[in-house]
Length: 221
Ligand code: BGC
Image (cartoon, rainbow, N blue to C red; front, side, top):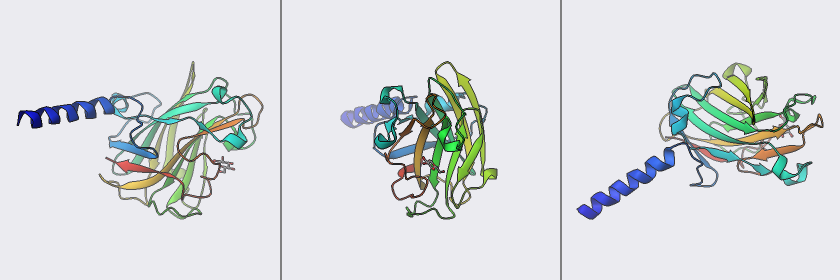
């Protein structure tokens, strides 16, 4: 009995430690969102501090124009409620620029979502790419993309910028246990008025905007 109780205590300690605002490395390619509704204002509400962070720091090697240690990277935390998926990005980016002509080449973050997780190799109605640049400009692509589905707020800071997004998930049934396909990307213009680096969370190729089959998994907890 005592052994059982101490084992339970250990497990609950471990679970608390894991959920307290730290980098989650528990399962590669699996991101967990906790239930909760933050205010989308680019401020880090208390609830965010209880969420695991996922690191977006893997370069796409053949598109890298700068030293990988200089490229912009981010941590992402996730929350969900009945209608929305929320993401809080803390981006490290030494030089901010929106000079590039293409939205995807400006300093920006992208969230790719396959709401039904049917892993189609082209985008369907439940698939979309949501992008927000450091100045708060929203753009996106994909069969399931509708600009009305995304709200975002951004804020610059000394090390880069922060993006908070809310995405309306029409094609998913948001409840505990729901899974979706997901990928995260940071686009970096390091001063060339072009994209100099791309950092990704899971799949290190530049194909997430076309193919959902290589996304990681999002679990609503
Ligand atoms: C990719 C670009 C692509 C764009 C299209 C970005 O995620 O990195 O290469 O052209 O999506 O939306």
